[in-house]
Length: 158
Image 1 (cartoon, rainbow, N blue to C red):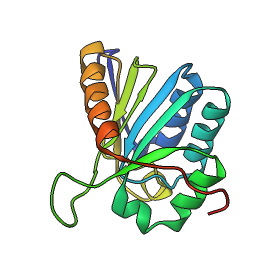
Image 2 (spheres, rainbow, N blue to C red; image 1 turned 30 degrees about the horizontal axis):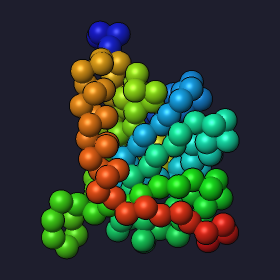
Image 3 (cartoon, rainbow, N blue to C red; image 1 turned 60 degrees about the vertical axis):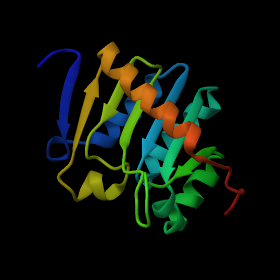
């Protein structure tokens, strides 16, 4: 497999640790479009990155956020700002992406939700991209999502 692409499966080990390592290695920014974010160690990694001065931008699915008090508490606990977005049209439409971009040098994508279920229960995958053209496409998509999404700042202790 090329050094520009690496594929990981949850059955082979901790995908959450791979993601957390990318967050730790980031020096400027993390942009992530995530259907779900409930994994405590991944939220903690993002919070620690924000406290190091990194720009953290998250776009989350509006419906999943609304039905998950745990996500709201997790994000509020780390003071992370984020935006919410539904799908393209109609009731039940989802912002179903699962990708992240680190310093515009690495992108992660795949079926893996940033949840303990994906980590511990599901068969999921994560693809690591270090190809500049592919990363640029993900960055363009993220900017479109970010511009369209509703800005949210959870209250402390929510």
